[in-house]
Image 1: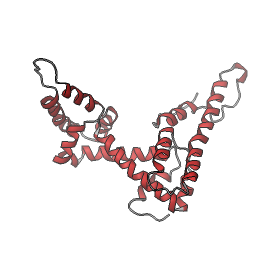
Image 2: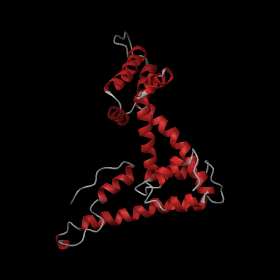
Image 3: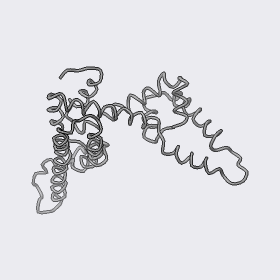
Image 4: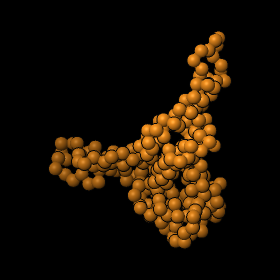
Length: 234
């Protein structure tokens, strides 16, 4: 497959054939963004203005603590907390609270700088996926060889495909291929979960668990797009 600056990240996440490629793509963007924020970018005024305004969600605060120093995280928090203290939540309020400020605090609680960066990056990655699928037979084969696509990214892909560069004449093929990667895997999960449950019947004692031992963890990954540790043994 011919590579350029836009397709290399796509190839990197599609080649491993391990889980959902879009989850790997999101994880890559999250890691890059948190490393960027807690690195040299934390001292850039324009970036700090944005992080002060947007804040971070619980998940990405946790990632920042893991990849950045405690000082870098403290400096980011210092200016973010100061903005909230000064503009939204002063210590002494006389009379009724300002409804606009309360609304702004509610909005801030649902806002995250990293989430927005990842969303922006995913939108551009989707565009490259759609373009590659439409124009590169090698990528189309790579796409169809994936282990599965999780439920969240299945809906994202299907929703965005018609508006992101796939010609209408091949949209049905893309829908079909993507549905197989999600719906086909869902059937496998359902069978594995059913087999897992059946193994607790005393009449199945000593029989083969097959691929069902980690069916719970794989099902959660498919449903939530988040991977959790698989059990060492049942």
